[in-house]
Structures are given as structure tokens and as C-alpha cells.
Amino acid sequence: MPVRNRVGGHVPVAGGLAAKGLEFGRRIGAETVQVFVANPRGWATPPGDPRQDEEFRTRCAEFDMPSYVHAPYLINFGSHTEATVDLSVVSLRHSLRRARQIGALGVVVHTGSATGGRERAVALAQIRERVRPLLDELTHEDDPWLLLESTAGQGSSLCSLAADLGPYLDALDRHPRLGLCLDTCHAFAAGHDLAVPGGVARLLDELSAVAGEGRLKLIHANDSKDVCGSRRDRHANIGAGHIGAQPFRALMRHPATRDVPLIIETPGGPEGHAADVKLLKELRAD
Image (cartoon, rainbow, N blue to C red):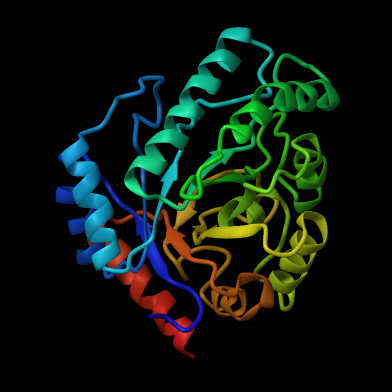
């Protein structure tokens, strides 16, 4: 058991959640994994394979390897297109239900954009109308958390800076099953300079002030190919981008991240992922 932060990665599951996903996770030295339960760039809602679900859930328990689900990228509850919002409801409900079936602790969803030139207040009102009922469906003890992931600030993003999360959480009444997923590349690209001394602490202090203690449930640990404030979401391997390796050590020492797992979503296939997992474990141990 890690003392503070488990380190793992997003794993491919084509060929089976357990057969392929967990094998990849063990190959890279993961202590936690994240998976897709549907095509991340489509609206399909596949039922899954009950045998694979059971094996995945059982083996995760045996390996002491918590799991998370990332919802499809197309989901956008701030869209001005009714069909997109309707499909977003179906897609997120599917991810939440599948997460419970495989024993995942949380479902990560991007906070989306206010498209069509609409005002933020209008988009947030729509988010309340369509997402709040989904949160109310989480009535089982083993239901997952819904984890909001802010974006890099492209276009009409609803949440990119930490301060943006306050109104979003308020729109959903700060539901008890609502948490946050911090993506370090997204935060850096949005303008939080994690590379400067004290930059990580400033961001985490602000997140705690905005969201409240205990809302941060997962971290996507990614370096950035682009400079701070670029608003470009391009992940780099740990230490190979503009954030650098040392801020990740500071990240794992801050009180707000105690027991919060780190998931890498970096380039390089299994070799690159294994190297990133190894480096993060070394930074954790220092």
C-alpha cells in the first residue's frame, strides 16, 4: 500500500476489461487504473460483458487496485443543441451505471462549454436541469462519484480556472456525490503556472477554498507540451514538458491530495506509461 497517493494509468480495454485492461495496468506497474466503458468519441452505450465485469471487479479487489471510468468526450451539458444534451444524459447515465457494475469508484466527465453564443448563466441553468437528476439516481452505497474535470480553456469553456468550478458546483447544489478530477495539463494550459515555486500549492489551496475540503478525488497527472496559458490540451510525459517533474513531488505533498490517486494519460504506449509511473513513484518516495 502506498503511504499517500496511488499511481496508475488509463488502460486500453479492447479485448476485455480484465483480460486486456488489468494486464496492461500490471505491465506498467499501476496501483490504480482508469478505463472507458464506451467509445470515447461516440454515443454508443454498449452493455458490457457480465463475465468480464465480474472478473475485472474481482481482480481489482485481489490486486487492491481501485478503478475509475472516464465518460465519453462528446458529452456537453452546456450545448445549445438539444440533441447533444439529450445524448449527453444517456451517455453519462450509461457511464455511471457501468461504473457501478465494474466496481469503479468514480466517473470523470468534462465540464463542457457554453456553445452557440449563449451566456454562462443559461448554460449552468441547463446543467442543473439535466445533471442534477442523474446525481439523484446515485442512491446505492457502491455508486460512483461524479468527478468534474475542468478543461484547458479552449473556446467557450465553462470551467478552466479553479474559480470557475464554484458556480458549477453551486448549480448542482454541491451534491454529496459530486467531486473533482484535477488534470495538471489542463490547469497549466488554462493559466495556473504549476512550474514556478509555490505554483502547485497556490492552485490546490484555491481548489480547496472554492470546492471545499474532500472534493478532490482524482488527479490526471500529465505534463504539458505547451506553455502556461496556451489553452492547448497536449499531454507530455512526466518531466518532458513545460511543467517538469518537480511540481509533481509538491503535488503529492500538499494536504489536499492526501490519499488522492494519480492517473497518467501520457504518450508513449506501455513503455512510456511504465516510465511515467516509475518516476511518479520515485517522486512520491522522496
